[in-house]
Amino acid sequence: MNSKQHKTLRAVFETPTRSDIRWADVESMLRAAGADVKGAGGSMVRVTLKGAVAVFHRPHPQPTAKKGAVKAVRQFLASVEIKP
Image (cartoon, rainbow, N blue to C red; front, side, top):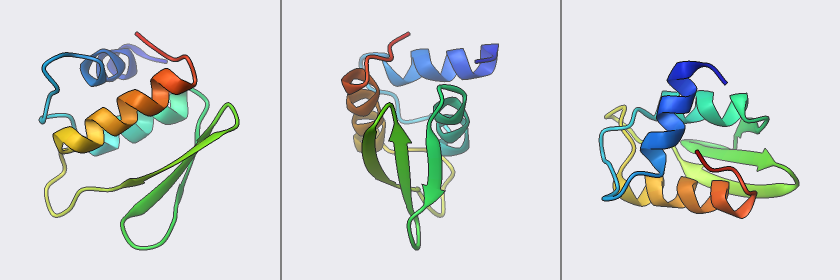
């Protein structure tokens, strides 16, 4: 991971949960962590990492992830033992 992706990873794990994280940065960080990120129809994104699978909703029209999405990404990363 590069420094921007590490920064995004730290932001995902911050409390209180942030609502200003760009979704494109989240996807970039997931890919750098080794995840396979694919579109799953419409605004859905299927993420496979270390054998675990999660489906997230890409935000639109705004580029930032809502708090619920950030929490879901945090839980997914913690479940595959990826933390900052």
